[in-house]
Amino acid sequence: KQEVTQIPAALSVPEGENLVLNCSFTDSAIYNLQWFRQDPGKGLTSLLLIQSSQREQTSGRLNASLDKSSGRSTLYIAASQPGDSATYLCAGNSGGGADGLTFGKGTHLIIQP
Amino acid sequence: GAVVSQHPSRVICKSGTSVKIECRSLDFQATTMFWYRQFPKKSLMLMATSNEGSKATYEQGVEKDKFLINHASLTLSTLTVTSAHPEDSSFYICSAGGGGDQPQHFGDGTRLSIL
Image (tube, rainbow over all chains, first blue to last red; front, side, top):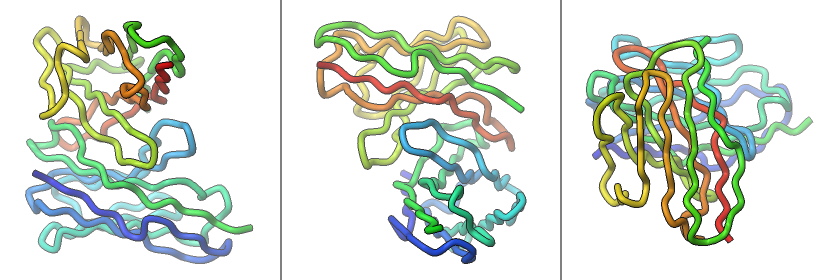
């Protein structure tokens, strides 16, 4: 059964810093990996999807990488802003992408103005 | 982009009440939708896979008679929490899409509080 772990559980940094959030998973047969953002009391916003054949995706200041052999994904946030404060979740699935997602517990990020 | 609408966003009701939550894909058809639950300070956990026109598939430990799922059309899945009790209080959220190399899109969730 897939297990997803996210480190650190919480992170507080000054505005402007570049930072890396880590995600590890136990089953290398993961198909897709998605990074989400969740604001308090809200639903999920999809940030990046790394498809099965890809190793990296970029969107604006965000860059996510996936290394299936080591069971790791990282989310890189450049030039962090207070509006980036949220909980960041990584999740993966299998079954050719048709299965539900297995989530990590998230990294609670605070960007200090 | 793909939009998933979930309703209601918040429910507060008495113990023993049954509560229905709707999940709609607004601009695309979804043969499969997923229902997740999130307890405070915990991760989202997959509860069940909702399949259009057939029975839902439940994850281990999720009572199918407690959490009734109906997926009668390609744009609507409903989750009914039957005879809800305080321990059912949680954040319930649905997703649609996925399959192959497509992302899953999530609704805004429903916060259920059982008194």
